[in-house]
Length: 505
Image (cartoon, rainbow, N blue to C red; front, side, top):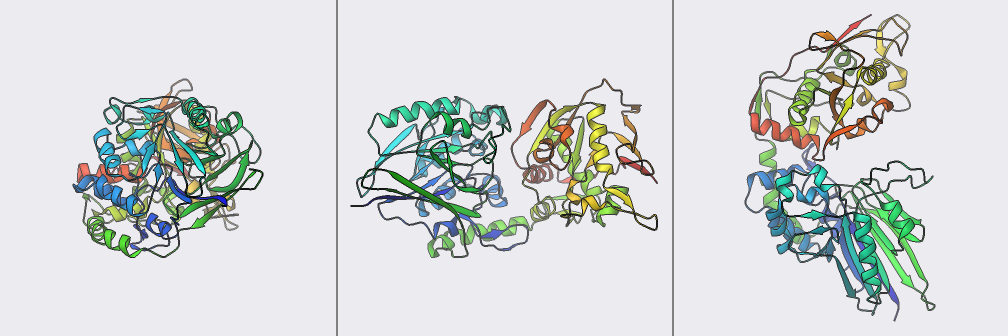
């Protein structure tokens, strides 16, 4: 009998079960149920998931804030999709231990998470014998940074150990059971660049490179970073990572030849546009209720936030950006905040719906708070000042560097909490003339906290000045969901009308 195995793997679904674009209110070729239409269950296949299942979409926001079904509905979806094994992602703890244990109790799949203790329904390892006799050993681990990110009350009674150490112990336990194949479900990514091997971060949040280099799992199925790649071999371990929000799933095909040599190939495949009839029926009513919720006013602004053209907003300020910064300042407790706007911005009427929020704050970003000083702020502001140029007639325009090779209005930042004066007649790199904090020119030695999205905090977009700043706090809930919660809690909102930037030209 051929000793073959096919694995179907998803990760970071983030509540995107249905083939729905919630911002545009239309059907989309994505979603877990569409992926599941292509899963094969034949006795020589397994369906696996790498965590971050319960949180992240308008659907799950509605589910967990407005209904009683909650995780039982999510478990039913996973059961209908045929999952055999799952691990936990950091966002799966967002609703607390009791809710997570209810989900696991209703789940047909076995949950493997070797570095979490104290949670009912979780195992460290499992061995399954396939129809063809192949013995497969599996384990799962999640990022041990969960306690840094999660509210203490949501993980009360749980302990988290180092993911690498737990994976090492689990591998030894599996090998002792004479398995033919070892598989690790890792809710984590890679600390090194996969092409060059260059170290990207030594924080310990992601340990995939070390796991491959120092351990010898046959397969490492990864997630967390939302960094899709396929068919990669690192130090003899085959690796793959699907994108987030169930836009694609991974298929891994394995076969042992007569000499017991293992051949592995993997690919990321599109979710497609086919929805199983039973899953479509299961989701029909909840999706309809979600759509109604998304279009029901959640709160009220004291003014409509109408977008203007990007140059005008950058030069004169944007109340949309002010609103985003006002949310970020409250939820982070930082002194300062910066945000950016998408290339195309929907904006808000005075009555704000959830759909407005997800259509206007379109980035899948999370929030970080870092420690900055005047030198860092000036460097960042000078980068934003490069957005402005003058055309042949001397009229203010957008710099070509923000339009080519791609349009990147999103790399212009709006800062709140300090009053900034720029003189655009000066050479780029020397345009910032004043930074005033609480009525006084900001001194060189004063440190402030700044909240910003994780993309910008990494230094991306030309803001390398942020990359070396000390991290004060990280909130891994997406900013769009933080905005939803802010509007839901405040209901009647006065938008900050401060003009934080003054341009001289």
